[in-house]
Image (cartoon, rainbow over all chains, first blue to last red; front, side, top):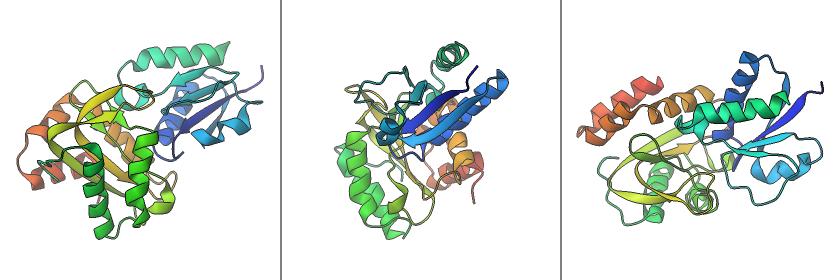
Length: 94
Length: 144
C-alpha cells in the first residue's frame, strides 16, 4: 500500500501543529502505520492538493479540498481525543 | 500577570505583548502581529475547566522563546480555535513567543498537559500569590 500523506497545519506552522504533528507520529507508531506527515502553515495546503490524503488542522479551513479535513483541537485540550484518533486511524488504514 | 482587568481581547493582547516587548523578548512588530493573528485564526480553547487561549504569531517577530501568562479577573471572549464563529469566555491566557520550530515541542506538550488538568487550572485561578503561580508553572513546565 502506498504511504499516505498527512498534512498537519496551523496558522503559523510552528505552535499547535508541532504538538499535533508529534501526536500523529505517535499514533501511527502505536498502530504500525507508515505515513508521510508534513507540518505546514494553513496557507501552504494548496501546494499539496495533488499528493495529500488527509488534512489535520487546528485552524479554520477556507477552501474545499479533495481530501478529508479533521479538526485537531482535541489534541490540545484532550476533549474528544479518542474519537478524533479513531477517525484519523480509519482514514489512514483505508 | 494576576487579576488583569480589561474590557476586551484586543486591549488584553496589547498589554501582554507590550510587556514582552519591553522585556526585549519580542520585536515591536509582534504586538500588531499577534492581535491580527488572533482575529484571523482564533486560539481560544474550551477545556473541562476554565477556558484558556494561546495567542501567538510568526517566529519572525520573536527574539527569544517566552510565555506570558495572564489570569483575568473577568473572562474575555475569544474565538474558539478552528471554528468560524464560536466564542468562549477565556480566563487564563498563555501568550506564546516562539522563535523557532522544534525547540519548544516538550514545553508545548507540558502546557497542553496543564489544559487537560482541571485541578491545575483551578489552582491558577484561585491562587493569590504571583510567586506561587510562577513557581508552580515553572515546576510544571520544567523551564529555567
